[in-house]
Image (cartoon, rainbow, N blue to C red):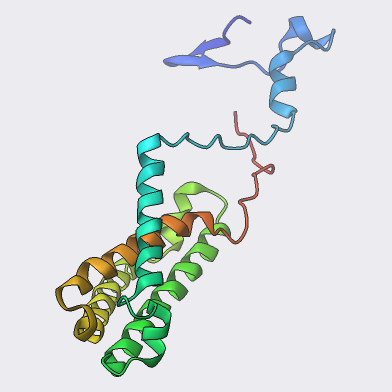
Length: 187
């Protein structure tokens, strides 16, 4: 191809050049009119250190949940132990539940948006400080509620459970993104 016709600082592509119009070999017009094949994003390969870190977070969280206070597991403790302060525990659970609801709501909003640049316009940026504050308050409430059982070990135990949750969350997608096939080209 010749590169187009020079115009004011650049080249303008000619759609109907006289040389190609009669034979139907205008490759540029054909390329623009064809629908693009949806290309699936290639996932980035994880390094062995990332995989090892993820496995360690999940294994340590499973250890915390299974062994609890060495007499019974964490689930049994949360239901039946009288040493736990119940009101802060329930308020912390409400805070975590609200965070999960906000995350799912913003995730569903982001799926409905067609262009990547519009996602941040649709999602409310004022939700981020609220979610962060709610998470910190929930962490403090959980720490206060579980302190009588593990004392100073409550903080690393809660952080371990939080990190395991963050490692597992990306693998629990509700659905997959649809490839965009209705993209209009303006060139």
